[in-house]
Image 1 (cartoon, rainbow, N blue to C red):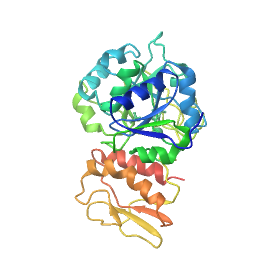
Image 2 (cartoon, rainbow, N blue to C red):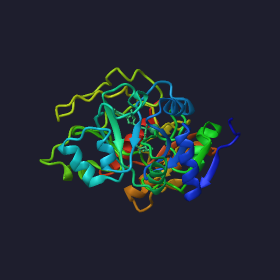
Image 3 (cartoon, rainbow, N blue to C red):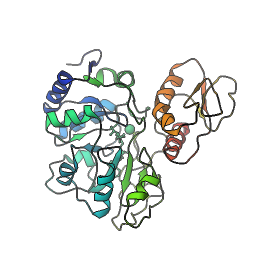
Image 4 (cartoon, protein in one colour):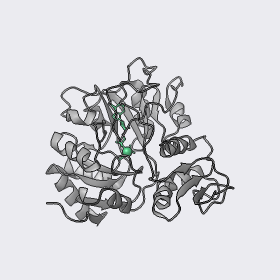
Length: 334
Ligand code: TXA
Ligand code: MG
């Protein structure tokens, strides 16, 4: 039975219990993490995972991130090397996803990895996602809880607006902290920049050295994920990274978005940063972490208001600014 609107339950024992019961029954639930809201299902249940793709309207099977309680649980699913252990020790629980060889007999549904020999896995820090993992006793596959190609949700309201009755239950625990999807690392390559910056990764990799960043991120709108993306590269660690297809347009508002804007042109709503005041600001003080946390919320707001087009101020490319610029380039591409 589909209900006309998703049920939104505030974080608490009752909400965790209901979410876990739904997961164990093969259903899907929207759950916040420290990055964005995820659309979670039992990663060991292929039908449940298929419901994620159906709810999002994802046109092809693009592999999903698996969320587990801790490193021990991750090691039962994926094969760790010294680098991966060092990164897990430094950043888990937290917004870092590791792409690692999947362990045979892990029980993870093939649909989760889209048939790849690697798996994307992370230990989230958020109490709600951790609560649902513990109460359901399952590893949870969870992409961002938005309709395919849309902007990632940082609030329960975003999820409801994007997925509507396609998601039966949303666990509401307020706005997410980081506001950007997790950093994805394969070997020593950053597949998707995120809250864990390249500088931070480097500090924890024995001997230093990080591959180039950000060209192997993957699509929500389709494309054949088995075709290596332009710029795909083997990891310097020697393990080949079979990255799914890349699509430029992602995280997309429905309106045109102009980058590096200093002033608003006619019909534009300007999102400012630092000295560029704008109609609204990502961070008046020029704080990149604050800007990351507000980015998707302001893109949602920009999409919903009366202005015909969106413009956004230049964002410095250092630290988490790299991830912000990555998302903006994708959002502007059409
Ligand atoms: O912060 C996050 O990572 C959020 C929260 C919910 O955890 N999740 C998220 O999932 O952003 P999603 O599905 O929107 O993005 C997952 C990315 C996709 O680009 C996917 O192609 C990539 O991870 N990915 C998954 N498995 C992979 C693999 N084996 N190799 C390379 N890329 C992979
Ligand atoms: Mg997504």
